[in-house]
Length: 533
Image 1 (tube, one colour):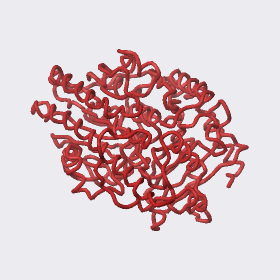
Image 2 (tube, helix red, strand yellow):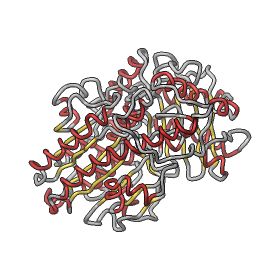
Image 3 (cartoon, helix red, strand yellow):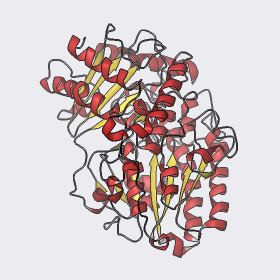
Image 4 (cartoon, one colour):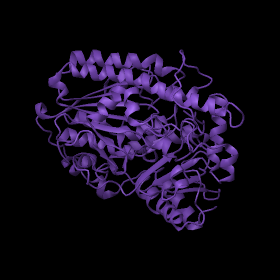
């Protein structure tokens, strides 16, 4: 199904706008004014724990059993406010991480291609922004946001961070099991020497459960306990996906994983055994990273005075299909398993989270997390009037949602996945923009012009729609795009609002140089292709 010509021109023009210098005269003329930070002694420390490829629990054991299997993540969750409908703004690793640390979409920064794109250090991120506000900022573990910073000591200084793990464990087979213990030990050593030098914001970025990406070619070093006996209720075969009109990019992704990570069966006697082994390994890898999270929490607990003044955030960069829809890994789609991720916020003072153990069902996005850290660091929302942060001022107020379960969230969240450079997705439209509302989800799949970030208006687009008012819609197994009027409404929302006003929202003039650098780097990298992880 093709979009109307007017809309194809609109979408092409919107993306093209992100490829040139952006910013209005009014924005450019604003001289940055420094925020006035609180007294350092009164400001909380911030500990951010990021894991890789962990979705919100779906088709997993019940929460009480899961808490036994993952006791340290449970320690955080029980003392925190949990965001039940929190979504990554991008897949895969590099794009997701860039959106997380900057609060900007990958279409705004150009940081999209895994292992190729470099996040321009000219973009503010939570390290540089909090350092400006008087915080010490540290990062330990996986970075995966640049070719040089991943490989050279002290390269994170340009981003405002001290510390670092070099070379960065960027997600090769077995990297999580090999390096997560070292990353946790780095934090423990740092904390022993620096816990009292407040305020600080320290990120511990762990790799697992990312090791799941490479099974069955990569095998765990020990036997894995079997925790599952049935396929996910939304497991599909490629043939069934074709019958249901699923976007071809998803079928290409399945084939790519069959080649790169090892073949999985879609017919025959061992289908259930192999796919449940896959899910069991995914859960086991979460157990392994949970042990390292325990080291971090135990270190924090050795200083009750520091612990009492430290806000802890736990989240992931993106999710993992885990066999749902017969898919592995992430990307090339907008399914819940790939894009809905955990976010827990723990504040022992209860100023931010007055109801520990509570949950929030408002829609929120990973681009709202960096603004949340600014609110924590400044003690309120006054930073939104600071000209240095005007590019984030319109993000959702997650701090208010933490404090008040009735506070408004987003009307919708936007998601993009552009992990395939140029047209390396074969004949499929591989550049995906999705929108998720409280009761439905839609996706637009497009081609880019070769060597550019512009959608090709002459190429066919594909569409996807799920209505959560039906069982099949909630499972996302039946693509309901025709003739549902709600599907057209959400496609219009993507074309008229999500693309031009959200993911390609023009940036202020002070970010022009950063965007020119990032988009230029992306255009060069799309000519060379990318990996799927």
